[in-house]
Image 1 (cartoon, helix red, strand yellow):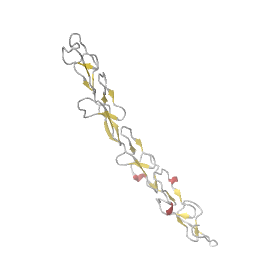
Image 2 (cartoon, helix red, strand yellow):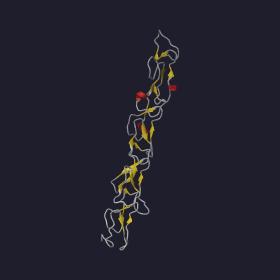
Image 3 (cartoon, rainbow, N blue to C red):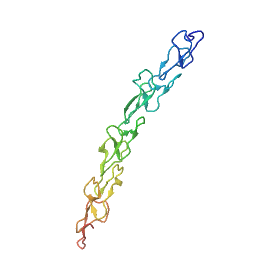
Image 4 (cartoon, rainbow, N blue to C red):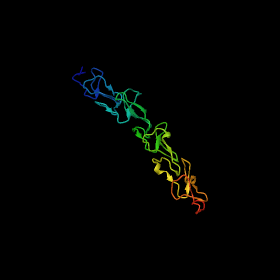
Length: 219
C-alpha cells in the first residue's frame, strides 16, 4: 500500500491515487496528509485550516474564530471571525458564535467580549455600551439595563452622559436650589426667592431669613 509503483512512495503532504503514476500530487489548501505513501489527502477538521499546499497538518483556528462551516470545495482553507456582539463558545471541533453575556459587549469582529463600565449598559445587539442619560448615574459594572441608572438627587444635576458616581452629579451653587431629581442642567437650579437664602451648595430648599434679616432674590 505504501509503495505505489516501482518504489514510488509519496512523502507526507503528497498523495497519488493511480498505481503506476510517475510522480506524486501535492495536497491542496484545505487538505493535508500526515503519512507517506497515501492515495488521498484528508480534509482539515472543523475549527482547523490549511492555506497552503503540501501540508502535513492543519493549523488551529485562532482566538474567537471558527472553521468555515460551508466550505466548497471541502476542507477548511480559512477561519471565520465571530461578528461584533458575539464570541466563541464550546470546544474545538464544535465551536459556535454566541451573543455576549448580559452586561458585556464586543464592537469588533473576532474579538472577545468585555464588561460594560460603570455608568453604562449594553445595547440590544451587544456591540456597544450606552451611557446613562444626562441627569442620571450608575456605579454598576457589567450592567445590562437602563434601570441601573439612577437619578441625580435633589440639589444636583448632570448634563454629561455615562456618569458613574452620584458625587459626579454637579451641585446647585449657593443661592440656588432644586427639589427635583434627575436634573439635566444648571438651569433647573432655581434662585431663592426674596426673604430666603441658601449658603450651601447642593441643597433642595432655601432657608428663611430671620425676622431681623432680609435678602434679595437669589441669595
